[in-house]
Length: 255
Image (cartoon, rainbow, N blue to C red; front, side, top):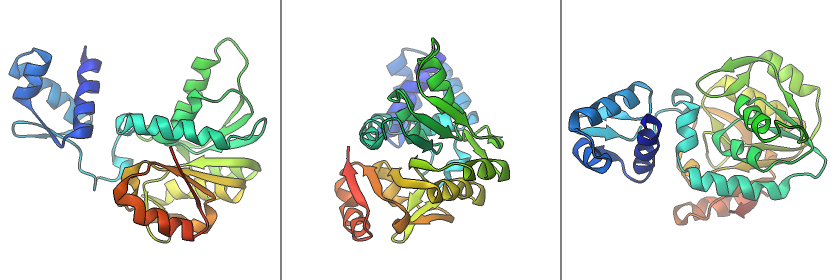
């Protein structure tokens, strides 16, 4: 029951900035006191921001490394599923791929059937173990390193050193945001691993939901010349970005 409440509340906050307590209580058929406890628990888990009268969506200026991976995975979930399915068009049959962790890239794990996968995401491995519990499926290499529990990412010098030993056909990745010069993320740790992966990949495919075009990060991951394909959604507010990115030689593909 608690999980259902949270999923429906997060779905509401995806479309609305604020969910009033009285409206939520009426929707779920519970008392106002019960709803306040649900909202307080969600705020404590960083699933929303508790304010007078209800629960507010977490502000966009909060950096992604402060927001739990499970929460980011629920934001724009339908759009992220479409992007993941579209990105599979660039999957090399029988090839070697690096899946850099991210809530959008994670969706690709539900479509993969074979090949060799390198990843720094424990959740990617969990999805594949569940799908292929009886055998078969791809060969998976989980990179070692320091696991960031909040963000589902393995980082550090061990991760980078292991990744340098491989040459991949395609790298799939996402990031915090972008600007006119390239792709951005929040910390030195979070940009170091994808930089190594991009240098070792023959083709680099970025997945970005429509909100990433209006977000910026502290650290530059790569410039646009290091990106071959951008898989995104055709959002009217982002069309000036599409033109600019294409001018850098990036193929922009809509899901």
